[in-house]
Length: 248
Image 1 (tube, rainbow, N blue to C red):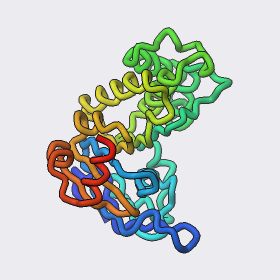
Image 2 (spheres, rainbow, N blue to C red):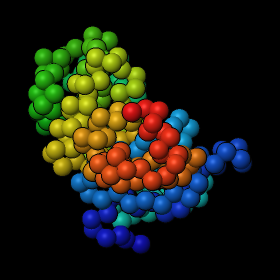
Image 3 (cartoon, rainbow, N blue to C red):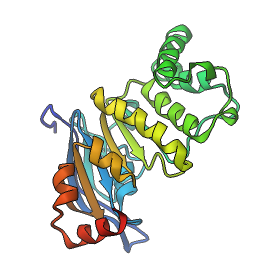
């Protein structure tokens, strides 16, 4: 089954059950359109990260389908690794290889998986390092960088694979407050350049300013969603009103 060309990711009736009783996802259906910046918010344990990680099958749903670029990636016949190459993923923790330089961290996957030449991969890596103002760190090791610098490197490492969508799982929650801004700034730049992004975050300012759509999850379900202005200024769902009253 293929989907309409503008739909990048289509999720149908996703359920994720742990230990036969805990419903982390309870019948979630959603579409992510090309060029959208979708921000997912909600209380801890609401299913946000499980939903995000289901989009590239880091979490395998108990039942339901995920279509990426028209292909059912939940099908046993699908080569998930090939599709994951087009889905950049950034976690709370940077997952950089400590024994490799920053340049080696960025070029490893394009050389191995995309079969780029070392020269081509390094040229693209330097271009990306310049984008985030860290070109002088190319030969440094991760231990020599601040948390904010490491997270920006983690983001451009994903970008080096030329993904069609970027998935962010609370990318700033492990950072010191003064480093959050530099990471959000890079994410804003990506959004302005038209990158399709799905972001789980607690940064409401980012959601208001950058999102094209904000989704509120609770108890494994999508309870409400809308454009940022409407979402924040005119929430309908009592649970969302309660959530926003505590965090804004």
